[in-house]
Length: 420
Image (cartoon, rainbow, N blue to C red; front, top):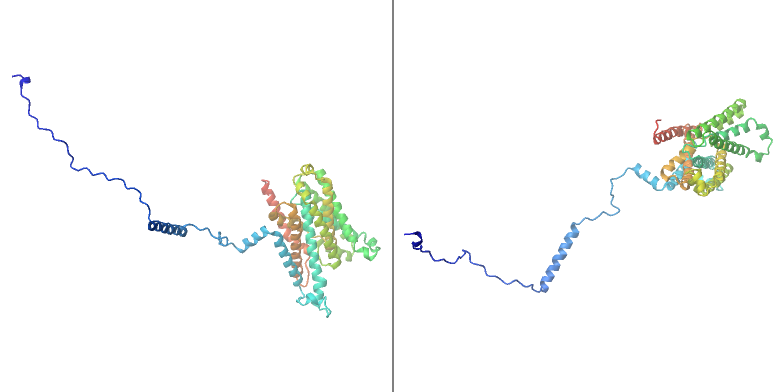
């Protein structure tokens, strides 16, 4: 039997495939229902509560009264006030220094002495000391310090040199030299003048000496070392040595009385203060401040160089001449009645320039105020440090100014990349 003739195997009938899990019936989608007033109110309440919680947990910046930085020291607060309002600080310091100068001394001054001298009652010794000695002396010290501070600021702007000081450049030495010649060589000729004119002989001579040295310094520095800072200082030192040599010659030829007067000029003192002298110094200082105010814009342009100042319309020769006359006038009047007081013209401008900047409109009046405060404090110390004796005020200004001058030289050497 062949394979093709074999009978077919019986097959079981096929059953439909069924899964073990029965299919889930489909549910129709839920349509959005219209919110009821109760649900809306509950939702709004929930929103309000969430907003309140958010406001409570969010960052609230501190108020301006809340300090952001740690508590600063008293010295830092004073420095901040000095930087923000130097004029107010100097005004308060000047008033305090003036009150200290008239109250401190060998003779006590009571509060009743302030009006006893002008009243109808008998004047006391304290009132005489206050109104005839201490108050004119304090005002004269303030006026002379302001004149020297303003002269220093003008000289630094004129020569464009931060180390330009009337004392270092020989301007005040020229005034002392002229005064020494009047007191010794020309003493007989000055004695023939009327008493009213003798008061103005020393101021006129001191002004002439300061003007001659200032003009000579300007011409010689331009001719020998044009544009050199060190050359300007060396020229000033040479003129200073020349004028002090003449003072030494006058000292050698002077009599005993003239020698005491020359010692007064060389050491510096404001003991010869009087109300007429204070009035003259105050008037000259007011004129010089007004002149400085007029020249402040031109000085700012001159700081960029003479060529740049000429391009913006500044008459440089006329400006230099006006500045030289103003500096000579201030130094001459200060030396005529107070002698040689150094370093005020160097210290005062640098104290205010670091705070007020290089704008001459602010530097000039602030330098005058700083010079007044410095000389007031120095004169008060000179009167009281060795009671009943009196130390010349020029010694105190030199003790303070010489280290400051060395510090300025060190700072300039560091900025220029050199070694000092």
